[in-house]
Image (cartoon, rainbow over all chains, first blue to last red; front, side, top):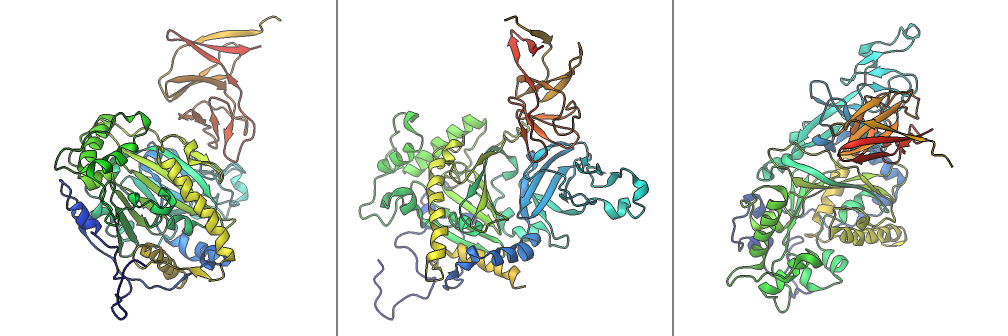
Length: 462
Length: 104
């Protein structure tokens, strides 16, 4: 309750902002010009009613999502490099829905419902990634071409009522953006480009299609899929969850909502926190950034007179990653290089286009229990423009109790994700005992959570 | 105890490929994944069909019939269709020459 406003002087709901400078003001002090999209403000007050806990805990609510929402939304199924050659396939599972995404002989990407047209047997295992020349049902041997056509029907004398036209695989919508393959089970859905809204425009300087998967992890989480996503939708928790309540780490964040399916936050890394009673010096900020490199990073460089820690550290990051990935990143601004830039596409896809925080997230409900979900985590690194992307590594599977630090390639973020997971289990317990009936959200910092629930309601109430 | 194993000399393969070794009544598939050679029995434990012709990637081979994947290091299957591991054989590499050890 830090802001001292006299009675009657209270701001309208949603108008209040944290004391001190905004994210946009912070990045305008950088030596390099940030992308225009970073300077936009697109916040809308969406209400302040509690979000009912039953949205998370009720099997009936989960069933309604499964029936009315999931079959009608675009979902990221895989990256193009998961299926580089004809016959490569990736199975995408969402609740009881399952799709096979494949590359045909003519290099087209197609997606089919993962069920034989004979007696419904799933043609491929859950989450499977592999290769086959055709899709052959393991039950009775019905065979479908990579184009989905029924091409072999054993003992066809018994099936005069079956034809290639009537019993080829059911194709669903597929489209790509930025090297990601999206599917939609609703064959009458609007195009992906409409669904993505501002995303392609905001990402035009990031060449997301030229990234490759360096690490992929699938973790089972002890919380409903929405609450899992919400843990990553605000930076309000950073100070307590990741920094033991210390002021130093508190970022300056912008929260924005775009029609209809996109929201974002962007928060500073390595800039002065305006809420500190005594602002840290630039060298102190530099040392905090340098600590991220671990114990073998050597001595922390000095910030030159008149320069900032952010700009100094960003140029070192660009140089180091440039050498590591054989590319020139000098055109990246300080904000693009350092900041936590997180875009969300409803209902379950997050992407971070920044250079040093290069993640993509996908969350999926557990079809058998609304108290659990699956978190697919990818690290996407810049691909050398002259090299083909390497094959994605095998997915590291982590169960509820497994630490992210067991997965190689997550760096200092492994321990950070563990801290987030501890909160999730505690939320699941609290949802069921809390007498209040719902979550209370901050109007500004937690607006993306409200946006998520309002978009779900759009489908459930339709 | 008498050593009942024998060595079979084989030529190296390009990465992410496999080749059937069908001499002396053996049915062994030599695979190269990520520059490391592996040898497995050429028999999918799902339905006994040949693994030759399957895709090799990331240390796994996918059976060309139904796509069952096997870990080339251990022989263990992935997915819902197979439970039994496929037989693996040690491959030694010495100065660019490969030999597979097969126990009799």
